[in-house]
Length: 259
Image (cartoon, rainbow, N blue to C red; front, side, top):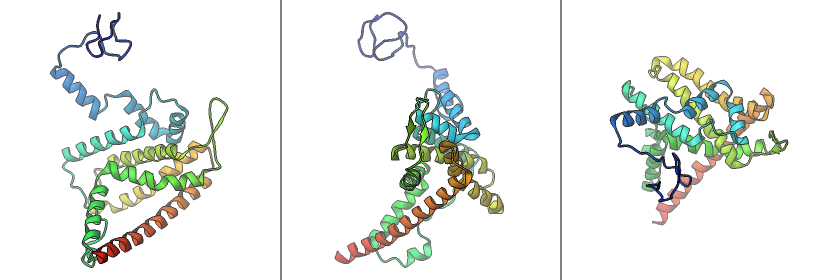
């Protein structure tokens, strides 16, 4: 038999070179419905298992993924993209209005006399309204603080070695934390009105605890050790954002002055 995909001659049900099945039929309505079901709902075992593991013991799941036990787990970025797609679909079907995200308030915007800065603010608003980009940007902001705060800590590898996480592994960990935020967003969908501010305040505290829980389980450190590191990471990010905003204002006003 000759593979219709790569042209390799072989015997069996699958091509040994590219994995193409020996028999491929016409695409049917059943195939289409199955594809949609798999992509957006619950047809992917990896998707379901990873979400469940993030609920019951997220830090242990992340540690297993970093070990290399990935056959039953979904990578964090594809998981985040799928969660956002399902979230937006459910939100659309329930006809839930989207809240407006403003990078800079209208009062401050009215006092900005830099066209370049206003264009930059508009760009940032588009980024903040994109759930995937916002989650990835948030993870990127916290990578360096968590890397520095846990630089001297290691996790035990099943092979007997101690594993010190690099920045990429911290990024993956924080994207998984972003996936936990998305799961909480699903729970909060029915509570989108201003009358549910109390519930949203509790949810904000729960969000703060997600990285505490993950790093507590990931490194097997105490709750207090994980909590204070999370607070310090937030302080570092806030200071960095303040410096970024000040430099951005100065840069764009200087650029317009030169023009």
